Length: 492
Ligand code: BES
Ligand code: MN
Ligand code: ZN
Image (cartoon, rainbow, N blue to C red; front, side):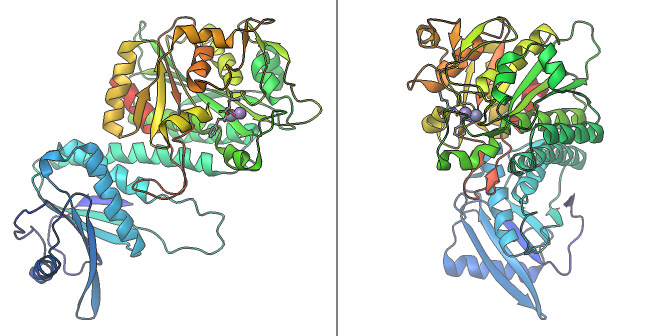
């Protein structure tokens, strides 16, 4: 999709989007042909269209047998316009344009823009590309090609900043859409080996380093918790190690990004029901977020050092699967009583975290995982749960979240609940029972972060959408890619 600034009025326009403030006098919009301006004025008056925040109205205008689709979008009070609201406005007007099968849209703005030109460009490009995403490769009936170009008809003081923003927004959206593709692919296509192969292709394309460990190497590393989860599957596990070195300073910190990579989660012998299983191809959304983030930060050439790790496997049933009741020794040496084979994500994560700390010497740990249904029950599909042992790191994440619009909400690492994951016969058990599931899962992970600054993101609720809305289409959201990328920019 081409996104640029328009420098002269155009004779014919197939699609026109007007972003206008509420109750503002509709003055003549720059570069807008007179006949269109007049038509808009009439429709606005006749329908008493107020341009309230996120209100939409579209109508066709025909002139010399050519049709122009006009989309009016209210922005409300421009003083209340922030990144998130602006992203949403672009998303809904682009969605309307897509419904009208637009190929080329012209955007006019009738308001005083409080956003910086950098952010304006970033959010415009990001929102347009995220909204334009669809996963339709398995549909036999091909849909019409989607939006090819957006022209912003506007005089800017600093077009260079705007263009830089567009470039950044593109990088954010492209990496997010990459993660969406990985998550949307079903488990018969994406399994540990193919996930690793895809990650290799991504690494080659963007230019970060990658190494993949197979079964033998994982066994030699004694990652028995990770191995236990994958034992029941015919598909061998893979440990995917990605690294990006952007800061040559000898004292520079290394940030570890750990993504849950269950390419399928049947629940194991503590089997899920059919309804609970359908979406479990998405149980590698954390892994996809990490792979997408690696791509974005390499593309942005950030001055940070990052190790991305995914312990990829499949939680299945067979004669070789792990049992409920098994006691396993994690790579760290701590033993775990498996009281529920469906609490598998944390078993894979702790070995990945321990490996990252002991072998890759990471200084800070950020993990992202579709870990507990409880996070979805608590926060729904718009807010990710976050638990952290470090205020400073959390504050940075908070400000990243404000920029990207990916909402997060903190839950406590409440010490007394550690009682719930104590076992009589092993150091820990892998679930804390039905109460406070998101908190107890995080307390379990905390036992393996060796006191390092650490953030845990539970995206079980936010990784998927069951209908299109704003920048989201049906299926994977790509949550975490923009959030982690922005966090790493703040850590630069
Ligand atoms: N992958 C699931 C969590 C999940 C549930 C993600 C729904 C997305 C939507 C995870 O492995 C799991 O099964 N968790 C269990 C934990 C329980 C056994 C302690 C859960 O949430 O029920
Ligand atoms: Mn599970
Ligand atoms: Zn799972």
